[in-house]
Length: 321
Image 1: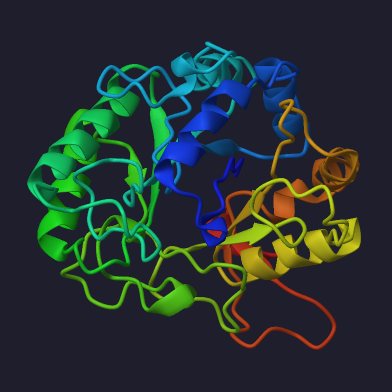
Image 2: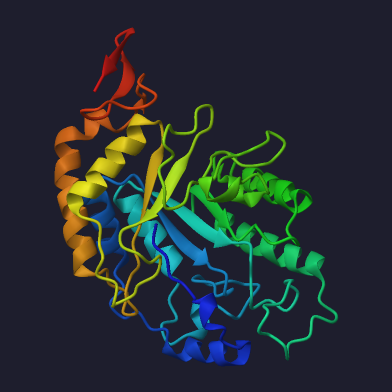
């Protein structure tokens, strides 16, 4: 996952935050280099932030001028990356926040927005806007593997909103996979779908690996490479290559996927620590990938004292790794 974030904890007033548009200029962004690095690391898909909670669209949106085309960069990052993903055999996927602090019709207002009235705000109008942007993403960028929603936890977003959004995604691209954060089925950070009535194709544990996996539920742990989702130059607390490989193996042995997060710099490059670790992971995967790709959870629910086990059907039988 590639995350480009706002910082809600900073409590920046909207009129001040808008000024940062003039500073967004990732001149070193190279979509081909990003996709090649991911493919060489053994990844099969890229999930990039199309819009985070701040409402800024990293693409050329016809329904908003709070987007990348209003910045000095003036290039559709998602379009370039989608083309690069196809070139390198990767599936293009989008992280898209339901929450939108910038849109005048999104409710509730932030606690610190004491001077920003909610009078006249219409959440139905915001919902139409959200659907319009999702429609752009699923019609202008080719086949999309996953729609990875977030920001569904506020009370204004209900199951009555989640199901239609899920249905829209599947109508526009019947083969797209949609995570459970499109609806209200998430049980805390564990990410498990708690009731079949809720929409969503897989659970999303965040910053954790469930002790025994999530039996009966497809799932994917989203985990940062260091301590932050977005780039933080002061954060040097990166997980070691060894620890990340062990984490990948642990997740595969429990039947899950790993979504490993990397935050690019303001210039559009990845930190050298991330680049080095991804290259090392790729070398390991080239040798041991058969034990990861296309496998199922191993038969040992609580793991093994000496390691982990995956399995897959082979020639009418079952092979353990």
